[in-house]
Image 1: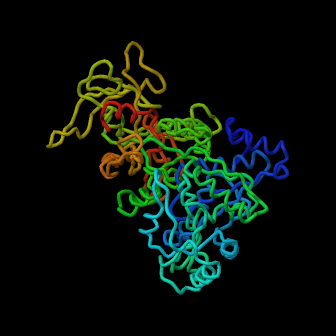
Image 2: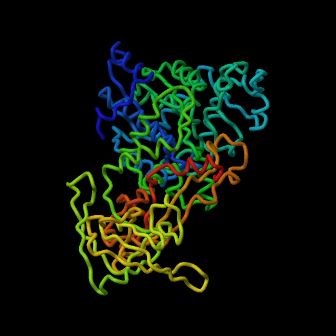
Length: 560
C-alpha cells in the first residue's frame, strides 16, 4: 500500500504525532499497534482503526505491530487469528512483528507480584454479585471489600496458589488497590487477574489464571515500545487506569493513549456479539456473508481494498459521533469500479426474444470494447443470434412514452447490435409471457434507422451461447438506520428482502471469471464472482452495488 495518495486529511491525531516528532519525544520515533481480540472476524469499524494506526506510522516513518489481545481463551480461537491476519494483509498493510498478549504472561505475572509486594494489589474472595454490589453506582461511591486489608504475605500466598490451580473458577480474583470512591468507575479497585481453567490457543494448559484487558493492554504497549496507542472513545474513561498501572510500575516506556470516535455505518451492526449471533443462529451465511460489514464479507461481496481504505480516509478522524451513511461507502466502490471493472452483459430475469426474420443458424460477430474509456482493456467477441434473452423489466405490452424500453409494436436497439421491433407476445397457460416474437432491421447494425424514432437501448444475451448463472442481489440487512442503537430485539429489525436470488443468463466470456473478479453488468450494476460458491460449471455472481443509490429512495418512501 502506498503512501502519499492515501494520507489521511489533517486531523487531531496527526497534529499530536507531528508535534511529538518535532519536539523529539521518543527520540522522534513513531510506533503504533493494532490489538484485536481473536474472538470474531474484523469489520469495517476495525478497518478504520487499521488504516489509522498503520497509516499514521507509515506517514511518520514508523512501524506497526499486530498484537492479538488473547486474554480470554473462552471466546478465542486460531480460526479468528488467521482470519484477522488475512484481512489485514488483504487491506494492503504489513506489520513489523506479530505479537500476542500471551507472549507477556510471564512478565505480567511478575508485575502483578510486584504490585502485591508494594501493597497496590490484593486478592479478593467476594462473589461476582457481591463485587457488583460493593462497586457502587455512578452517583454513589463504592465500599471497600472486607478482603482489601489482607496482608501482603496472605495476598502473595493466595495469588501463587491461584496460579498453581488450587482454586475453582471465580473463587478469587486479583484487584488493584486504588480508590473505591473514585468518580471514575474504572478506578474502583479494578480486577486484573481471574481464574479460568481452560486451554489457551497459544499457551495450552500452562496457565489457569489470565490477566484482564485493562491491565494487559498498557503493559503490552509499554513492553513493545509503542509511542502512540490509538483506540476508540470507549477507552477514554480507561485512560487514567492505563496511566496508573504504568506509573505505579515505573515502566521505562509510557505510551500516549489517544482516543477517536468509532464508526457506526448505516443499516449495519458493529457489535461483535450481535454479529456472532447472526452467524450462530444461521440468519446469514457465515462471517463472510456479503450482507455483513465484516472485511471478509465486504471482500466476498466485491469491495476492493483500495475502496475501503479510501472510505476510511473520507470519514475522517474526530472525537464526535461517526455515524456514516451507507451511500458514502457505496459511492466509493462505484468510483473505484467505474474505472477498473470491465463491461459485460448479464440478464437477471430472462425473457426470450425470437427474431423471426433473422436467418436460423446464422451469427453476426460483434467486436465489443471491454471498457468504453480504457482501450488498454481490449475487446471481446459477442455473437448476435436469432434468439436472445432480455430482462423482463425491459418489456411491456403497453407503456407510455416515458418508458424507454421495448413495447409491443415499438422499436429499441439491442446494445452493440440491431434495432428490433416487438411484433407478438406468446403466453403460457398461466398467462405469463413466455416469449416475444420480434423482427429486426438488418441495416441498423451500429446505427439508428433513418426517419424512425427508437425508444432506447437495452442489453441482451444470446440464448444459444449465454451461460446460466445464479445472481445474488443484496440490500441492507437491517431496516433501521443504526440498529446497534435500537433497543428493540434486533431480530425485529432484519430486512426480510436483504437477499434476492435470480437465475439469470450471462454472456459466454464470463465462463472464465476468476473468483472475486469484478465486472459491470451493463445497466444492472457491479458484480463479483462469488469466492465461495462460484465455479466454471456453476457461475455465481454477487451484486457489489447498483449503478445508483436505489435503497435510499426505497427507504425514504417507507419501502424498508
